[in-house]
Image 1 (cartoon, rainbow over the protein chains, first blue to last red):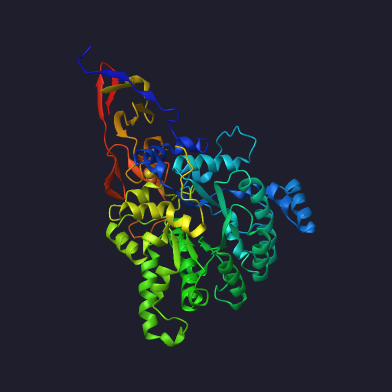
Image 2 (tube, rainbow over the protein chains, first blue to last red):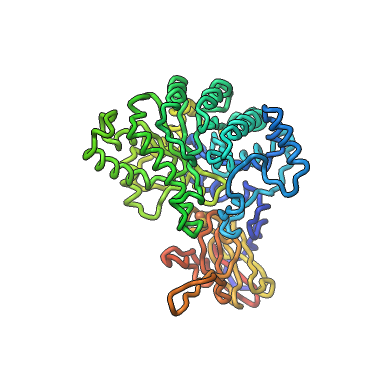
Length: 410
Length: 120
Ligand code: FES
């Protein structure tokens, strides 16, 4: 026996993470990092996390109001062989997000959930909140974010309403820390108005969302009533990005990596261009827009591009009284994920250009492959503690009227 | 302080032991007969890299005329893939194949009388 002090190491219960690994265990490092940084005492609001609503689709279809479609959906789920979720559109076989299984939590969360008193997604969301040290988590659906391309615009309405009613019953009423944005079936503007009238006052609904993958112009006159309602009720409108590989502009991109990198930005670049150049911030100065899941690097690019072009062609955008970039940094808010961190000086410049201290809101995008922990904000070297507190929670509290006292226990 | 992990004979080729040394986590791997020890903290966001899946490195052979056809696995190179976001590291060098400056932190590994020890 030598003189070196030796003791047995403890074998970790999970040697190799899989789709069965408990979320709490998988996120244990994030939880420990949060404790080490003292984030228990910080308000942390996650503006963009996801659950997989298609797993519960045979429950959700019970909430379809149209009796004919409801009966068809129930029959389909009972009898049709290998049935994908009724009425959902999208490229169901091109879901390569997990890189061939390398990132298991993106594929599924088959972990054991004992608590049967609440929906399984409530437990999974609670575990994610604990792991990421989050006080309030805004939960978005996943495959429904493709519904803007649905050939039947009425189906988007039917499914948006069914999903919303199911979410209120099963997620929002189960835990006041779970929040959501009301899905607007944007291809039917009148139905967006009805959605707001019918559901916007439900506890837990703190904003509105437009899934960005669609071909409708956000400046069309048909939407002005929706924006007026959102402004009057103080409900921010969140444009949640997505990808769309059938988009002709991405038809030559042969890897998911390239398609996803561009697609998640492209849709919001187009909507933002239309939003600003058509003077929506001038027409509805109290309306807050939030740009979700496109990362941040696109914003300085678009600011520079639009400012330069605008000064040469002002007569084409006569509603603007200031530079496009000024609207983008004062009327618009941004969620952080997936934050581009590999070029710190570019990130610093981005933070300055978007006025991150007041306009940026932390988001995780858990459980997706490019999720960000709160540490991505807490570790930034070029902003002070107050800016970090703002981005991690206080900006969201201000925008969505949330309490500023942390409620989590780590 | 050093920590006893296992007997050398207990970790076969392609196998691992991921252990906690009073809270500091280390993964010990055997590849092509040799043992390697890495801290269980990914360079990217501190993810539990040593608990990721192991894949052979993916390569894409380029023909003499500059064309490519299929991808292949390199049977000699093993990558540890961080389960959080997919950063890949060569288990023997600890380096990311796309940026060698991105690398795992090595843990001190000792083998004594057939027993494996690591120091946190
Ligand atoms: S923490 Fe390992 S890939 Fe992100």
